[in-house]
Figure 1 (cartoon, rainbow, N blue to C red):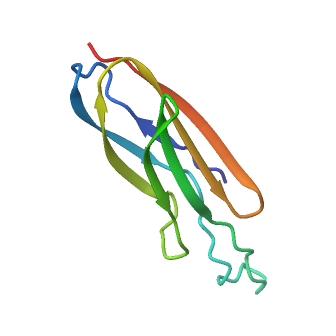
Figure 2 (tube, helix red, strand yellow; figure 1 turned 135 degrees about the horizontal axis):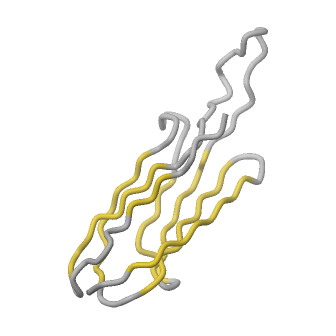
Figure 3 (cartoon, rainbow, N blue to C red; figure 1 turned 180 degrees about the vertical axis):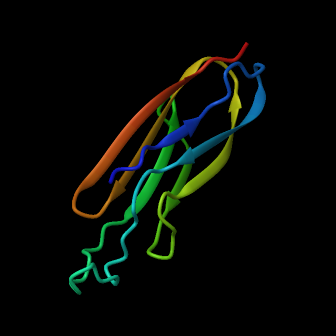
Length: 107
């Protein structure tokens, strides 16, 4: 069952304000050690890298490892100097790659 990804970007921060960005990556994070109901090992499937860019400039990055729980939660701070686009990308095992974008519109 797929779990949706949640991304929270403040609606209208003040220009120059430092704002918190919160991301919950919807992913099972299977470590490849757990047996399924038939005794077979569930294949490893992890998110291994997360990056956030503001108009192409890297503002946050994380390398994730097998000890990370399912649906990893990440939070970081960004200065909202002007309107822009936040690009969220994450990569994982089995050539997994996902990208989402959100606008940030300082008042």
